[in-house]
Image (tube, rainbow, N blue to C red; front, top):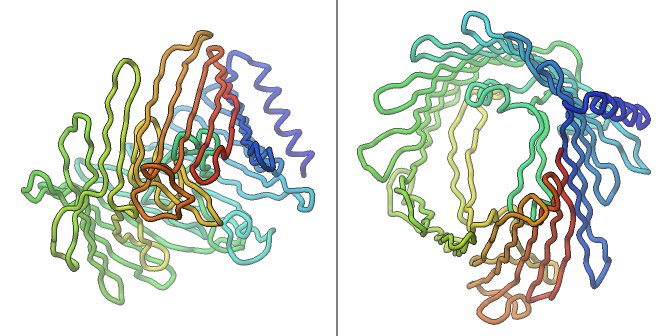
Length: 463
C-alpha cells in the first residue's frame, strides 16, 4: 500500500513537471523548539502540488508531522461545458506499528439542464477509521444521493433522495457544491500559520454496507415574504414522515438596532420545537469595536444588552496598534434551529467566537487558541492584550511583517502564572520575504510562568 501511494504521488509530480507552465503549489514547514527541555517539540510540513490541464485541476497533497507521514490525499475537479465534477481520495499512511489504510473516496458531479442543477453524490468510506464509528478499521460502507435544485421567479426549490448517505441538501442549497466538499484549512490565530485545522471531504456514509439502503427524502423551498426570507422543509425516512420545518431569516421588527436573525418552528410526530435568535445591528465603527449580545430573562423576555468585549484598532505610519479586553470570558453566541434530517431532525448550529485582537490573532475560548500558559497541568488564558503589527516591503522581494502581542489577565490566577500588571506573556512573530515566492517565518513565546517557552521557525514556498 505504501509503495502504491508513493508511486501515485510521483506520477502526479511527474505530470506536473511535464507542463511547467501549468504547475503550481506550495510547501510550508516549521519546527517548534523548547530550548530548555526536549529541544524539538513539534514539527509540521505541508506539500501541495497542482497540475492544471483542460479546465481541470489535479492535486496531490501530503502532511508530515513529528510522528512521520500523517496523511496523503489526491483530488481532481473541473468542468467541461455544462458538466462539472469533483473527486477526492484519502489514505492513512500508517505508522511503523500500523499498516497504511484507505479512508475515504468521495465524488460529486453536477450538470445544469433547463435551469435545474442535477447533482449526483457517491462515497465509499471506512466508517470506523474515517467517521470514527464503532467497529474496527476495514468496515467499509458506500452510499449515494441525487439532488435537484431549481428556481422559478422568487421561488427556489431543492430535493434530495439518499441511499446510505447523510443528507447534503441543506449545505449545497445554501452554499453550493463547493460549500459541502473538497479539502480546506483554517487558522485560528497568527501562531497557527504553523498548524492549521484541516477539514476534508464532506460526504458521510451511514452504515458499513455496500448495498443500496434507502435513507431519506428531503425537500426545501425558499421564497421571500415582505421583510423576511422563508425556508420550508420536509423530510421522510423509512419510518415515514420525519419532520416539517419553517424557518424565517433576517426579520425586520421595526427596531433599527435589533433584528431576529432566525426564527424556526419544527414539527414531528411527537410535537414541535420553537427557537429564535436575536441579532444586534451595530453601525460602522471608527476604531473601538464593541461585541454585544442580547440578554434573555427566561425564554422570550429581553432583559438587556451585554457588552462582552471591546477592541481598539488604529493604524499609524504603516503599523497597526490594537488592544482588546474580554469582559465575559466564556462569551459565545449560539443560533440553533431545526431542519428535517435522517432521524426526525438535525440541529444546525451557527456559532462564532470573539475575535479579540487585530494583527490576525483570534481568541477562541473553547479552542484555547491564540495564546495560553500551561502551569502544573492546568491551562490559563488571558482576557486582555495589546500589540503592534508592521508590514512593509522586504529588501529581497515579498513582504516583511513584524508583530509583538502582549497578554494580560484581570482574573484570579496562581501567583506564578502572571507578573506585574497581570502580564501573562508575550508572543513575537516575524515574516520576511526573501524572494517573490519564498518567505521565512519565526516566532517566540515568553511567559511569566515559564520564561522563554518556545522558539519556532520555518519557511513558506509558493510557485
